[in-house]
Length: 50
Image 1 (cartoon, helix red, strand yellow):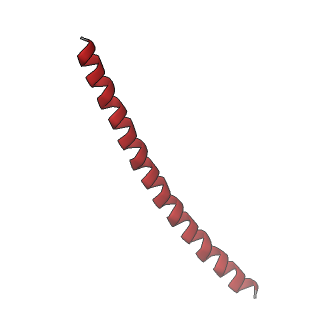
Image 2: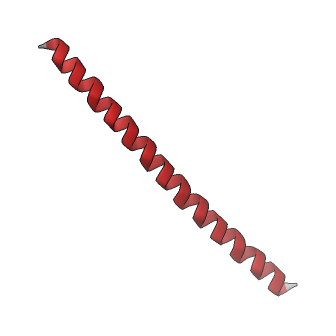
Image 3: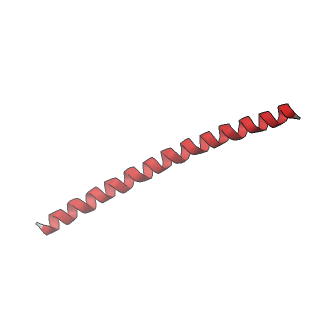
Protein backbone atom coordinates (compact mmCIF):
# COMPACT_ATOMS: atom_id res chain seq x y z
CA UNK A 1 0.00 0.00 0.00
CA UNK A 2 2.72 2.44 1.02
CA UNK A 3 4.86 1.57 -2.01
CA UNK A 4 1.89 2.04 -4.34
CA UNK A 5 1.16 5.43 -2.78
CA UNK A 6 4.80 6.46 -3.13
CA UNK A 7 4.81 5.34 -6.77
CA UNK A 8 1.65 7.31 -7.48
CA UNK A 9 3.07 10.36 -5.71
CA UNK A 10 6.30 10.12 -7.71
CA UNK A 11 4.42 9.84 -10.99
CA UNK A 12 2.18 12.80 -10.21
CA UNK A 13 5.19 14.95 -9.25
CA UNK A 14 6.95 13.98 -12.47
CA UNK A 15 3.81 14.76 -14.47
CA UNK A 16 3.39 18.12 -12.75
CA UNK A 17 6.99 19.06 -13.53
CA UNK A 18 6.54 18.04 -17.15
CA UNK A 19 3.31 20.02 -17.41
CA UNK A 20 4.93 23.02 -15.75
CA UNK A 21 7.91 23.01 -18.10
CA UNK A 22 5.65 22.48 -21.12
CA UNK A 23 3.42 25.37 -20.06
CA UNK A 24 6.48 27.50 -19.35
CA UNK A 25 7.88 26.85 -22.84
CA UNK A 26 4.47 27.53 -24.34
CA UNK A 27 4.04 30.80 -22.44
CA UNK A 28 7.58 31.86 -23.39
CA UNK A 29 6.72 31.18 -27.04
CA UNK A 30 3.46 33.15 -26.75
CA UNK A 31 5.31 36.02 -25.06
CA UNK A 32 7.90 36.03 -27.84
CA UNK A 33 5.18 36.18 -30.49
CA UNK A 34 3.36 38.93 -28.61
CA UNK A 35 6.56 40.93 -28.21
CA UNK A 36 7.40 40.68 -31.90
CA UNK A 37 3.85 41.75 -32.74
CA UNK A 38 4.16 44.69 -30.36
CA UNK A 39 7.46 45.68 -31.96
CA UNK A 40 5.93 45.62 -35.43
CA UNK A 41 2.93 47.65 -34.29
CA UNK A 42 5.17 50.14 -32.48
CA UNK A 43 7.43 50.58 -35.50
CA UNK A 44 4.39 51.06 -37.74
CA UNK A 45 2.99 53.56 -35.27
CA UNK A 46 6.26 55.50 -35.18
CA UNK A 47 6.45 55.34 -38.97
CA UNK A 48 2.95 56.81 -39.26
CA UNK A 49 3.70 59.55 -36.73
CA UNK A 50 6.75 60.65 -38.73
